[in-house]
Image (cartoon, rainbow, N blue to C red; front, top):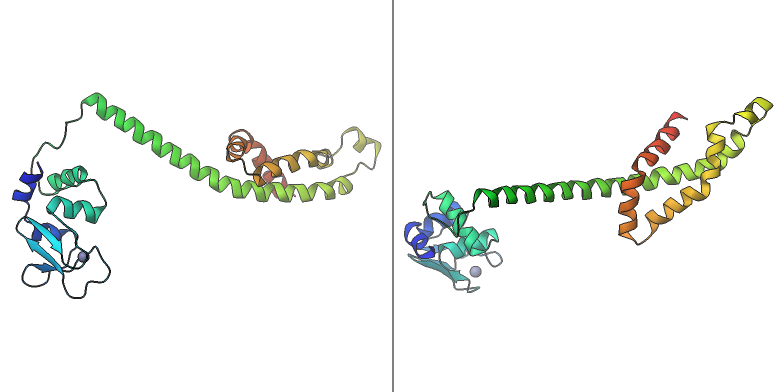
Length: 202
Ligand SMILES: [Zn+2]
């Protein structure tokens, strides 16, 4: 398979297509070591070699190194890009493809959840800190003055009793246990949102 690619994809063509700058006489600016002002990579019909950093290989190796891919994936890419129509590795069965899609979907969801958690973590800490500071004020500000108020105290006055609880939540967010934080994210998102809304209503 690699031999066939070597035969069918001219390395100079591929090098150019992948952004390697060609110089004169089959020489090219090597993309693998620092600035290569004088082209020090030689392109042969069957491969390349850099006389400065000693990188070498065939067209698949070149693309694999340029793209940071395993050779078999580079071969797959060349196969597609140059319409070679080769069978690279084993063709996936429909079941395997379905499985791959499922796994890709799982990875995507996990990434989204991680991102949502990171954003929430910072935000929740701000909300809870502000909430905690407000509780002391509310205790005095909303203390019942009349018998009627005593019978149905303001929600803000009642919240003032939550100081310890809020401190406990803040402790988790300040702590080292990522697991506890994630669990907090899963179970307390709505509650933190309620706190936030209450703060906004003031
Ligand atoms: Zn080089």
